[in-house]
Image (cartoon, rainbow, N blue to C red; front, side, top):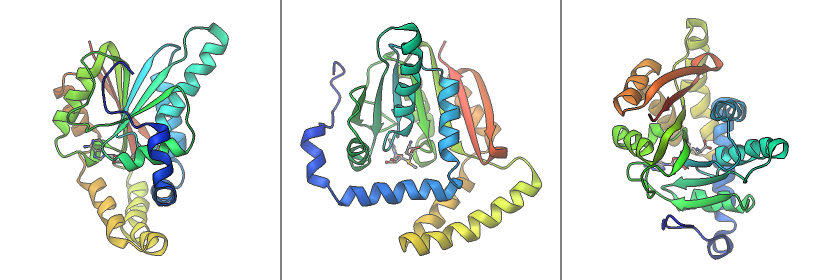
Amino acid sequence: TSFGFRDVKREDKAPLVRGVFDRSARRYDLMNDIMSLGIHRVWKDMVMTRANPQPGQLLIDVAGGTGDLARAFVAKAEMVRKRRGGKPARAIVTDINEQMLVAGLKRGGDPQLDWAVGDAQALPFPDGCTDCVTIAFGIRNVTDRAAALSEMRRVLKPAGQFLCLEFSRPTTRPLETVYDAWSFNAIPAFGELIAKDRDSYQYLVESIRRFPHQEAFADEVRAAGFARVEVTNFSGGIAALHTGWKV
Ligand code: SAM
């Protein structure tokens, strides 16, 4: 592509890693399903409805993993294109972990998707190159959140939209009680049972606790320079969508 970023070539990488990444991607998908009781698929669809993808647009999906959001973006734009015409939309899945991208590539080589290794804190893309930037369940893992937020704003075109989906805080007491029991007891137990890895799942739960709550994170998004920042709770705040615009 024209950006000059490191592109993971479909043909080069995929055969080398057969097996290993099938397993890790499957395990990763399972982990998302367990954490959210399968609801992350619905949440991702809601994120893409908000993104409102149009023919000819470009999405950069940061910490994009195996490319769920990117696939949904081009698919939704394609539905619009069938009615109204225009160019196909495109999406770049970028992730710090090449193995995640390779696992995503192996799910199927959609020609509208590109794959690029990249750190959210120093994105390998030029200023103002994309219509939309998303990050789903990724910002929590980034060390310097302010740097990542400012990078995501930098690569957006003026009037471009930023959307961030992340686990957040339940907004009612009863839900919080159930959620605490679920996350502190059930999830580490599942981790032990399914992945023989209680510690990783324990870490996951703790990282969700440490992440700022809805309003505190909205302040961080505003501090990065985004305008018209909004928070939408999903499933009573178990996850939250933060959106903002570059003006
Ligand atoms: N967005 C995908 C989804 O929702 O299915 C993947 C989410 S996964 C829980 C988190 C991803 O963040 C991993 O693929 C990981 O490699 C990536 N990641 C962690 N730190 C990152 C960083 N500094 N820059 C880019 N990606 C990062």
